[in-house]
Image 1 (spheres, chains in turn blue, red):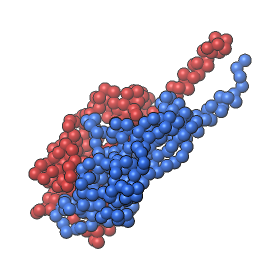
Image 2 (cartoon, rainbow over the protein chains, first blue to last red; image 1 turned 90 degrees about the horizontal axis):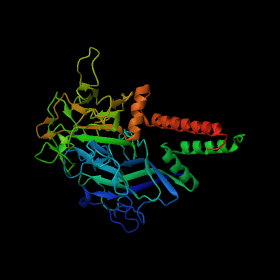
Image 3 (cartoon, rainbow over the protein chains, first blue to last red; image 1 turned 90 degrees about the vertical axis):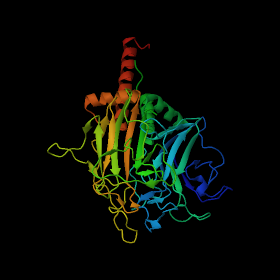
Length: 217
Length: 219
C-alpha cells in the first residue's frame, strides 16, 4: 500500500510537451497525456495486480468579484482578458475511468467535474477547500484512469515557461495497492466494503484470527 | 461505484446576450439576479443550468452534505424537498436559508464585492455545518434556491455570484441500504452503509458456520 501523488503544471514543457495557451480554453485536457504541461509516457492504468484508490483531486482556484472593474489581479489571480469579474482560470477537474466520467449533474449528464473554487490547489487562507472526495474513486485492475482539466477563462494563466506563482495546475492524491494488498482490495470490493488502508488491515487481521482459531472438533 | 461523491457549482455566468446556458461557456459574463427572489440553481433560468429538475429515481438516494454561496450582497441558499423548505424561522415562517456569510463559497472569499486586493482583508471561514445532512428519498424532487438581498448590478458593473452543493449519490443496493438505515434511525453516510454491509456479511458467516456444525462438520 503506497500513498502516491501526481502534480501537473500547465506551463511545464518537461519531456517535450507544449505550454498551455488560450487555444485550450473550453477543452478538456488530460493532465497525464494531454500534451500540455508535464506529462507521463503512457495513459495512467492499473496492471492486473494493482488497485488504485483516488482520494483527492484539486485544481487551480477561482475567485469571483465584480465585472468592469480596473482590478487586474485579485488575491493573486489574473482576471484574464474578459474583465467579467472572474479571476483565475475558472478551472474544473473531472475523473474518468475507462470512458466513464465520475462526476455527473443531477440530470445524469457528465459535468466538468470539481471546481477549483471548491477544491483549490494549492490551498491558502484565501482559497480553502469545501469538498473532499469521499467516498473515494476506485480504479480496478486493468482499468485506465484519467484526470481532465477544463478552463473557461481566457488569458488567466502564466506566460509560457513561467512555472512560479499561482497559475494553472492540478493535483491528484491516490493510494496504490499492489500484489496481495490488491487482492484484498478486490475482496473488499466484492464484499461491498470501502477500500482504505484501515479496512485492508482489518481484513488481514480477520484472516489471521481465522487461521489461528482452534479447529472445530 | 454505487456510492459517489458529487458536486454542483452554479454561477450567474452566461454567454453574452443570454441569461442562462446548459453548459459552461468560455469568458461568460455575469447576468443580473433580481433581488429577494429565489432561483433554483438547477433550472432557475439564470447562469448554468441542467436539463431537468433535480430528482432521485426509485433506485437512488441522495444525501446533501454541504451547501455554500457567495458571501456578499446578502446571498443565501435554501433547500427545498418537493414543496417543503428545509430551513425555517423559529415561528415556522419562511426564511432565505443559510447565508453566504455563514457558509461562504469559495471558502476564504471576501464579504464584499467590487473591492481590490489592497483594501480587502477579509477571508471568511464557515460558521455553518450542514449536520445532520439533508436526505432526498427515492422519487423526491429537490431544489437548491439562491436569493440575494442587494442587487448585483450597478451601472455597467455586474457582480458574479456563485453557489455550491456537495452531495453523495447512493445508487442500487446502496440506496436500499440507505433506506434500511433510515428505517433503523441510523445516520446515512458511507461509513454506516459499510457498517451495515459488514453486519450482513458477519451474519451470513455465522449462519454458515452454524449450518456446518449442524451437519456434523460437512458443508
